[in-house]
Image 1 (cartoon, rainbow, N blue to C red):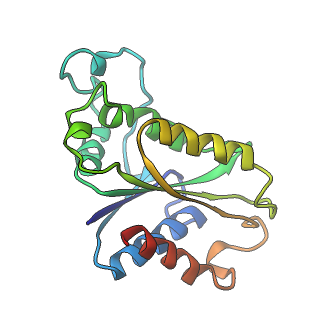
Image 2 (image 1 turned 90 degrees about the vertical axis):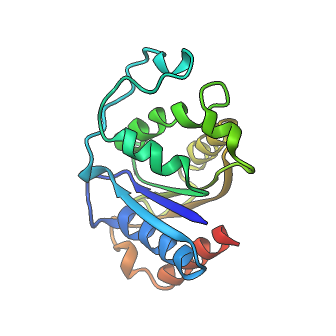
Length: 187
């Protein structure tokens, strides 16, 4: 099994990166091959809406680092998408990444989709400063539904709250809880 983690934050060592890395660690402990990608280390441009990927077998016309991600994700069994919550939604970095995924995962566009024996597993991991994990629940449910419509098997939506006053790595029991989510992903 291969599990990919994508941290959609410009903070390389922030809360979101820590959460994604703990989930990947749990997957690795169960024997999954893992790879971690960080938005802050990549050149990713937003989708331009040209629909070139919809025409025949053409790839995305934007020549940036997303091609490397497409290749890696196409051969993975699971994806962990981590995003901080800004203004009640995923980060702009996560939105750019998400918009650019349709090249690979929409059944109308991708030969990769047709070759899969099972839908790609997905964990959505959100970090938020507000301590109320239910505050943005409608948005989290909406995002989960969007990924399900793209044929992802959404295994969990993780919300790590209260990071404005206490860093994720300092929250009691969170390290083991995130590793457990990663190990369940591999099961």
